[in-house]
Image (cartoon, rainbow, N blue to C red; front, top):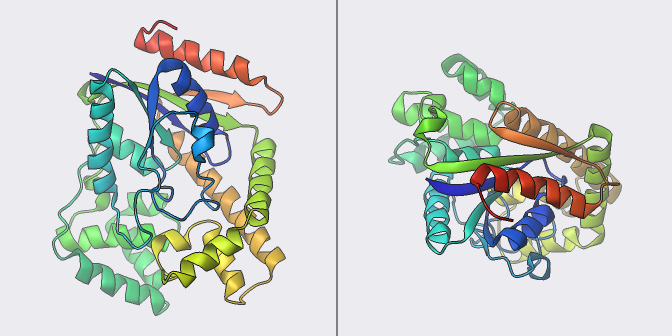
Amino acid sequence: MTPLVVILGPTATGKSELAVEIAVRLGGEIVSADSVQVYKYLDIGTAKIAPWQQKGVPHHLLGSLEPDEEFTVAQFQQQARLIIEEISSRKKLPFLVGGTGLYIQAVIDPYEFPLQHGLKVVRKDLSESIEAGRAAELYAELQRIDPEAATRIHPNDHHRLIRALEVYRLTRQPITSFQVRKTATALRYELVMIGLDRNRAELYRRIDLRVEKMFRDGLIDEARDLLEQGFESSLKPLQTLGYRQAISYLEGKCDLDAAISLAKRATRNYAKRQLTWFRRDSRIHWFTLKDEDHPEVVYDEIMEHICKRLLLDR
């Protein structure tokens, strides 16, 4: 099987920087598993790692799409798997790094996705229902047809709500029926899964500091530039954390302090949902990081775990 190191965890734990350091030491390349960092021009609000921070480590699926290009989980699955095999064929160690749980599981587990025929018509109908204020009705429908999916999807997560309902309307099967995980023996990768976590208070403090820094570094200007380029504020990437609040400020719906406060709260809630998702996977070996930890000690501990699992020489 192809060796694959997965580094995951909630936002603001320090995944990107740590993955680069480990990849440098093990001769690796990184495949981004972030559903928003895949888009161009969305840099500040996604905390996208800058070229100088990559330390020569190749990064794939990072800033490769226009903000108005549709990119599904099925497309990510196909592209990421091809890139991982290509990295491995060059005798390099592939790393899958990010915080989007479904993207990660779509790659490492035998997920299947329904056909896309008729998708645009169904999606348009559902989107119009959301815009008409019928989100609660649609969520009630999801609870009826796919209670398992409803427990995973927040009523205000309109993107995932639409996705789950469109799958059912197209196939008459719940979306969970396509997201099948088999036993580890059925997997295509020799997996090492590293989970990064922090004390809750420390994590929330890091999230708050990150959000404040994003706004200081020009998130408002970045959002304004995207709108001035002609990208609609309703696009999925522009409805994500930070950008949604920045655009609300630009549209005069809230003042700057309120936008920052809302972005902090939304990001903390997102981190909780990420942890809930990841905690279900018993394959993950967790490392609890602390700000006072010496980086080299942390790198050594994680390196030792990876090398032991993959029988690599350090």
